[in-house]
Length: 146
Image (cartoon, rainbow, N blue to C red; front, side, top):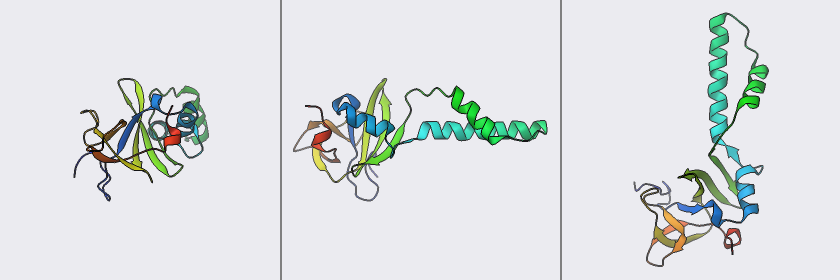
């Protein structure tokens, strides 16, 4: 299967820079109630697993709440990856060269765009409409700046 395409529909994922999306929408995508910080969740699970192992090795009782509190106090995520569904658009954040971008995995909006650079082979560049380009999932026009 072609990379960066939906496994069932064969439609290309769309990719768009975060600075091309309205700030209020970006805030919803990153911090709204529907958003899941998958980097944080994975780090939390690893931390708890390690602390539980350490307690077992030391013959101590594992206090999960204390471990969670310590993790929350010390976690300093940078360039975390967030995923969710907002206004029927399924997305995943990522970082290219320190710049926030969003993959659009599913959406009621589909249009033709220029193919992305080698950073996202097979995906459509949502900043570059092209009637001869790849068909890709898109975001609502109301999300775009300008």
